Length: 319
Image (cartoon, rainbow, N blue to C red):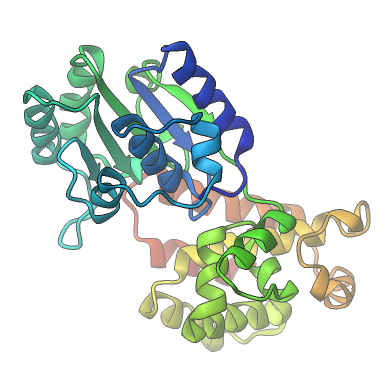
């Protein structure tokens, strides 16, 4: 069951009805908002027999038919999720050659669907091999790229895909998502999730995740008074628990709230911290520059093979 993203689901549903699905799509948006989930739901719908529209299929409780179960388990032969493996940091040319091999095989099923997860992680050789596959797609092959920014791929690829942009969920949608998992909504956790259903689930069920998010919030509240050695210890901790990118997302929303606080306080995300933000905005200068520094750090991490800890450390020492 997909929460939010009605516009994109309606668009895909109409294309299916018309028989005019494209060969390639890029699902673009921040992490943990349901892009990959929707790609898998689309694969389930296309490979199975469902007597309802794709929109209705995506908005109902998850299907438990044989094909859908196999796709959920990652064992359906015509649906492959291609992503970064634990032992390496990029999608390799070997992965693309396997995609080419799979797409050439005969099949009794309607489509061959390839989902490229975290699409900013292709190697240069993989991109070159992928271009030929995208330029001359085999009949009934569909390629879905899932990533935060379509600009991470070269224009020779993006010119051949349709880009669907995904936004974070509203707070009401997040509440509905939590209720579907029998979890009582908590306003502070909803705010910390920043519209990400995957994150709100982790914050609600995993005490360690909640602990480290609370540590990050405490740092943001007092960052301008934190001594140098404590800033370095903070970064070391974030790297150890693999929360460096989480801090960038959280910090960017925090400082955007500070920036708009005096102009449009009804639109801030962290309403539970409004009193703290109102005090902090009087003490912190150059908020707009801090936002630009966060955005630039995220951009460098997205587009280049860089040392993430070093970049985040430089950012924290600078603000």
